[in-house]
Image (cartoon, rainbow, N blue to C red; front, side):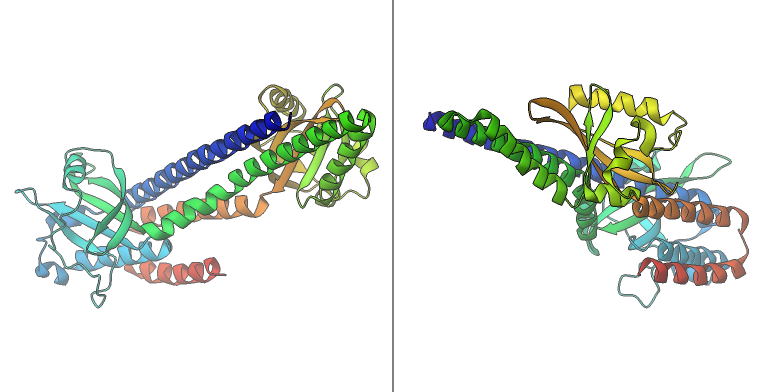
Length: 393
């Protein structure tokens, strides 16, 4: 009996570790892909917001330094780079008739050791850049090492709007080291949810098995179940996350822990128990669907496909609405199947995402209406400095 249990425990531990490693890799890959798509979108916005047509007439030599158009585009690249603190370099590449790729200009000051003068050869990513110059849609490459460091880079074509011919490629570089840390940081929340679910289920399963073994030894199955419930109740009450227990047969709330009552502004648990299924949500979700119907569909899905993760709009007792990340999974409590919901407030995260999106729209609008007005560039520099200070808080 002991040997069988030991082997079974080892097998469960191996399955758990395999699941953790697999899910970790999947989450990191998904976050990396999402960040690459975001970087490519930013590069396309810059390529669309700035009129680079003057660059097609540059000689790609030091003679360009005296051209008003060169200085104007150079200043805009500097301002745009400052507006994206995570981006280290922004530059425009051209290609000579012999196929040699070179730098038209970059976002570095001439005094910088990383400054690239007009006409400097760019020998990296020949095949990928050749495809973009030939009509490709853009790529995100890296991590790649070059003379300036190791980077994740977005490259997008810059075309003449009249002829549609690609005459340049816009590049944006992010340091690979900072990129990796950002991927890990963004992956932490979903991975943490998964680990919490696994540890909760594993701990509960362990308690159940231990109590069952004790009950067989002492012929006290009822006492063991009560002990298991007490242990789970301790975990439930002391959890730093908001938790709710839902009874599937009637779709009613059975219990909420102290953190859940605090999050929703309830005085006591009886206020929760008096609510119906949609009582913790506004009438409709952001997509226009009824909260009560959407909640029922999600709960039914969790009974079949536990665990599941999703975002949801909740409503506090005060009437304030907030966004939350939710994990939902089945548990067996005193011989009955229940659903446990874990809620984390992500209001600040959503606010930051909305502010970043609004800033991108403002930047695109600025370049659409302020072409040729150099005095606005100076004003934008001041706005960028203010933005950098706010982001650095």
